[in-house]
Structure formats: C-alpha cells, structure tokens
Length: 124
Image (cartoon, rainbow, N blue to C red; front, top):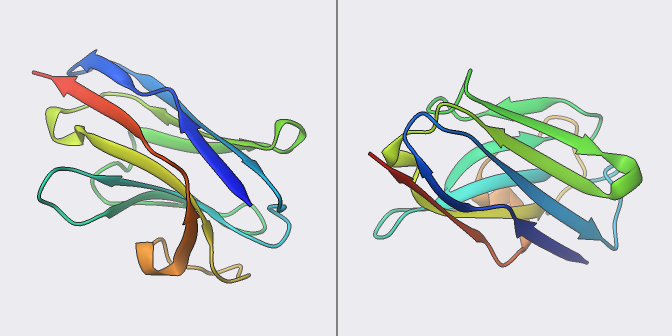
C-alpha cells in the first residue's frame, strides 16, 4: 500500500491549489481516502474524506471552499482548494482508512498508511 501527496506550494490568500494523492495497492471499492493537515504545534486535522461508495465529508473550516474528487482510472484522489486562507498553512497528508465502511468519520484515528505530505503555505 502506498500513497503519495503532491501539489503543494506557496499561494496568496484567496488563491487556489489542487493537491493530488496517487495511491496503489488497494481500491476505493473497499476503502476511504482522507486528506488531513497539520500545522506546527497543532494536532492533525481532518480536512476532507471520500468514503467507500463515493460519499464526501468536509471539515467545517473548509466547507464551501474545498472539493474532494477521485479519478479511478488514474488511482488518484484530488483536493481542490479555493479561497485559501493563511490559517490553511500546514503540511497536507493523504491516508487510507483502517476500516471498510460507508459511514467512516473523517478523523485521523480512523486512517493509516499515511503518505509523506506536501507543504501548503498561504501568505496574507
């Protein structure tokens, strides 16, 4: 099982970035993929998840601004981030769920097999 996040960078507040999570060794027919972020000195926060079956979940702080999607043919999950804010500065990780559930909550404890992370910096 492997996951690799990419697409981070430096962007001004109000700008956009699209993160990609390329995965291998499993299928989204049985697992969920989540995006999480961790800023220095803070706990890892659930940003968005795409569940087994295609259902999507968003953290309250990103609802209406971020969109998660998947391309099964490319084994890739995307996170489109619009209207970025400085408080969104963090390392963003993608991970595979520990469990096979259609109703998984998007919390870090439900996920394992973490990718290496990609840095997102939003300047004010």
